[in-house]
Length: 381
Length: 132
Ligand SMILES: [Zn+2]
Image 1: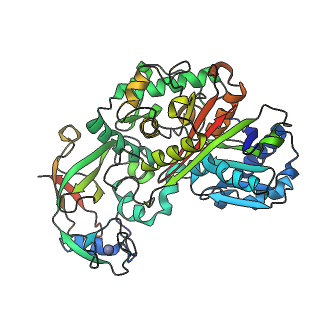
Image 2: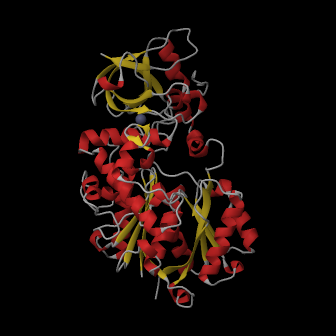
Image 3: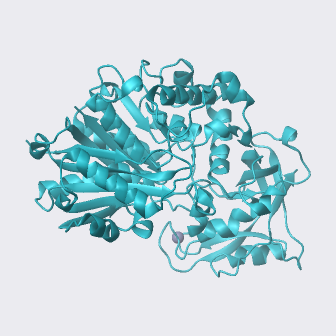
């Protein structure tokens, strides 16, 4: 029996502003994930995180010191949500080669309290400072607003489509419970909500959160002894275009297709030996409604321009043809850059989805976007 | 909101703009433009990058009317239009900019635009666009 499984998951309570610091939140999630996996924290012998955000904010050595974990394996995979989602790719290599037994992945963020929040993040790109920020192109909602406007022109996206996706995810979040927002969202509420950067409104944008999530991976054999039902890593995919983060929002022939999404999905589905139609639910990186719709298309769930109509037909709701973001996603649950998507997929496959459980869920797909990187994780019972 | 552009990788754009020209990085080895500026040509990896003038005619690729102040400097200017424009003479190169002499209701995808270059002595070297 080859391969690995996820045996432990944990996240801190979704919230805008936590009463603890980022390091404390990460350690809390990591310890709880170990407990969920039925191991002592000192049994962690490998760590994998994204390669851009965590190594410079909550480094592996700090977490290892708190856990009392001696590492025989340590790795980071580029960029935020893509890196976290594809982290099992590296964990699997380490476990298969005997370099590690229990591998921890974590991600935490304090953009709810940190000055500048997510908007300050792109200051790491000097070309953006020179050529974009002076024109007020200074925040993610504006970047994605440009894509949405162009998408409306080229592919017939309508505000109704965006509304339908947002309303479905809020409905999922309320059925799931425990998310950062408890306010219902109707279609009328959507259209009455404040514009942020036209055509994107408040509900089209992800939340901003303080928090952390973590998960523990081990071999399928060892997973049989874990206290909770193991969730198998059926396959991973990771792809990154030769495009700088400076260019990714404005340059390139076609901004409405994310080539890395298709490439990573092809890798993962090929390795899992399944078709996209075999996927029972998807947790798709919904930093914005528009980017979520684009990924649904580029992952292959439907043709280009058809994700909006899919949402409008109610197919992304629990009970629909393709339930998307069963916990409410980044727009209605929390914004930990996608670690909550991995955690929610595991909950679903354990049958712990509560009011948001997808009936008969056997295979779930997680997509993690941090342009130009994309990570895909296919999980199964 | 003046541009802080002392970085030698970025400065030729602003120097040209103050001189009344729109210029982009151009590779003498493979004779192709690229954007944003990189230390080496991303098409052929040649180390010498020159700058070449191009005409300021552009088309509106997309735009947004921004209604939320993400930082203090811009909160005072709400609402404002951010535009992404295709430079007609250099297919594949786009500029983020602000539009002048127009209003949100007058905007449409592919609207023809012309560059508005800054005065020679201006501290503000931003390149704006207006309908043509
Ligand atoms: Zn070249």
